[in-house]
Each structure stands twice: as C-alpha cells, then as structure tokens.
Amino acid sequence: MRVVKITKYGTLDVLKLDCLEKPKPKDDEVLVKIKAIPITTEDPLQRKGKPYFTRLFLGLTKPKRSVIGAEFSGRIEAIGKNVTLFDIGDSVFGHSGSNLGCYAEYVCVKQNGLILKRPLNMNDEEVAPVCTFMAAWNFMVVLANVKPNQNVLINGASGTVGSAAVQIAKSFGAIVTGVCSTTNIEVVKSLGADQVIDYTTDSFTENNELYDIIFDVANKSTFSQSKYSLTRNGIYLNPVLSASILAQMLWTRIFSQKKVKFSATGLLSISIRKGYLKQIVELFEKNKLKTIIDKRYCLEQIIEAHRYVEGGNKKGNVIINMIN
Ligand SMILES: NC(=O)c1ccc[n+]([C@@H]2O[C@H](COP(=O)([O-])OP(=O)(O)OC[C@H]3O[C@@H](n4cnc5c(N)ncnc54)[C@H](OP(=O)(O)O)[C@@H]3O)[C@@H](O)[C@H]2O)c1
Image (cartoon, rainbow, N blue to C red):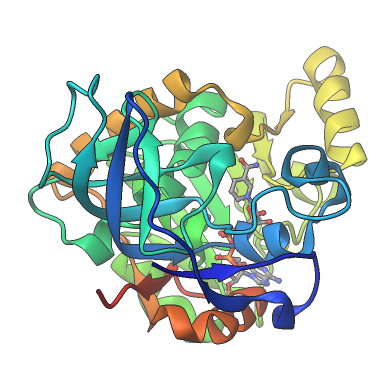
C-alpha cells in the first residue's frame, strides 16, 4: 500500500512517499480502507516532534511511528475474529490515537477505539475531519458549559477548531461573535455567527462589548487583555498550553470570579472522547453542524498540504483524498 513515511523529525522534506505491506487486523481490530484524511494543525507538529514534550509519546530522538496522521474516513475491508460492532463494508470515520498510521491506504483500528459509523447524510470527505470537533466540544460544552443567550466570542473563528466552536455554540443557542481576517468574513457568517469582527481593522478588546465566554482559538490575545471584555463570571478559554495559562488557570480558580480554562483534549480517555463524538454526530445528523473544506490534495501532494496548513490561515479543513 502507498504511504507517506517520516524517519526523522524536521522540515517538509522529511515527508517521503513509500510502500509498505498492507496491515492485518488483530482479533479485536478492523481494517479500514482509507478514503480521506484531514491535515490538521497537529500534523506539522507530529512531523517536527514539537512541542518537545510530545516526543515522550511520539519518540524521543526519532518518530516511533514512521507513518503519522491520526484521523480518517473510509470503508471496513476486513475484521478480526472477535469484532462484533462493525461489518465488512461499513463506512466509518475516526481517530487512530497514538498508533497514528493514517498517511496510508489502510489502517487497523480497535473496534472499541475512536471509530464510529459515518452519518448517512455525510460523504467520506465531509466526515474525515469530524474528530476535530471534539476539541471545540471539550472547550465550549464541557469547560465553559455554554448556555442559550450567552454572549460568546470566538477569536480565530474561520480555522478548524474555531469553525467548529462557532457552530457548537450556535447549536446551544448562544449569541456568537466570530473574529477573523477580511477574506474569511463570509465563511464565518455562513457558520451562523451573529456578528463578525475583522481583526485587521477592529479589536474585540476595544469595542466595549462584554462576553460570557471568550475562546481564543488563535492564541492571539491574553487573559490580561481580554478580562475587561468578560462579564463578571466570564470564562477565558485558550487551547494552547503554556506556563502562563496554567498559572492563570490555578490563580483564577481560587482568587477570581472570571476564570481561565485549558484542557488537552487529546489526553482525555477514549471513552470520554467517544462520548463527545457521539453527541457531535447527533448534531451532524440533524444538520446543525457542517465541516468546511478549504483545500483538497492527493497523498502525493502531502508536502503542499503541510505547507498550507503551517501557514496558519486555513478556512476550516484541509483534506487528502486517497485515490484507490
Ligand atoms: N488543547 C486542545 O485540546 C487543542 C485541540 C486542537 C487544537 N488545539 C490548538 O488550537 C489552535 C488552533 O487550531 P486550528 O486547527 O483551529 O488552527 P487553524 O485552522 O490554523 O486556525 C487558526 C485561525 O487563526 C486565525 N488567526 C490568525 N491570526 C489571527 C489573529 N491575529 N486574530 C484572530 N485570529 C487569527 C486564522 O484566521 P484568518 O485566516 O482569518 O487570519 C485561522 O482561521 C492550535 O494552536 C492547535 O494546536 C488545541
């Protein structure tokens, strides 16, 4: 099968096309013929082994898994002898966890892992990035407990996590303001945002509005800058781990009515994340959520896909379609 391998951490040129033997599913695994994979902001980080603490999982000096990529959609081609939850021919999507292995034509996944049947109203390409909604769910629903009529601001509303967060907040009845650059205003409006702020001309910290929740997906503000734009019990969310976020989280938990919150969604247990995913799928089935596809590539164009994603201005998602 065709794969993209990396044998060392580094720049774009470490991504190499290669061939490997097709994997065989173990007793509790399914073999998925991959149809589409999203290239997320995590992919260039897996390639570079950054931030460095992630090498504890990825491999200290070189990648433990030469085939990276963790999200997929596809068709089940074979099942292990103990598999009861899926059948050959099922259309599925999911996340292969620390096994990675999705820059390939086939991947094996445990039946109890992060894998679900594809909603009937979605195709392979649309469903491939659905696992990215888990982070937005974790922040908006679990950490912030978003409620109807709350005033919510999403800074970085046109990217992968931001576009999911806008829609999830809207589906809970919040009043949503999205922040993005001029070129992405229409995209953010199409997600249902009630207001859009163009950060190239205006600043949400200077518009005299108060928000119950500020989700700084883009990590372009700080709690100190944002706290005057929060209501009395407002919550500032930031998805990027830093010493200052952790310190502010601890400090505000005890000493402030306004709270700072962070969580690493990828470190939550599979059963917790699968719970999120099932609730997200219900909203997709009711057409309350959609995935935005910005660019499409084939596996041979993996370097271009990584280059584009690293640019930091993708609208929604970037997809690799497997031609097989
Ligand atoms: N903690 C977790 O569980 C978790 C999970 C997943 C991801 N993450 C992190 O979340 C972050 C966002 O990921 P993503 O996949 O959504 O990234 P992305 O798709 O690249 O989106 C980033 C967005 O930031 C916007 N942006 C750039 N400069 C901005 C500015 N000055 N002000 C406001 N917005 C600006 C861009 O919009 P324009 O193009 O309009 O400029 C872009 O849409 C990453 O750091 C990722 O590592 C954390």
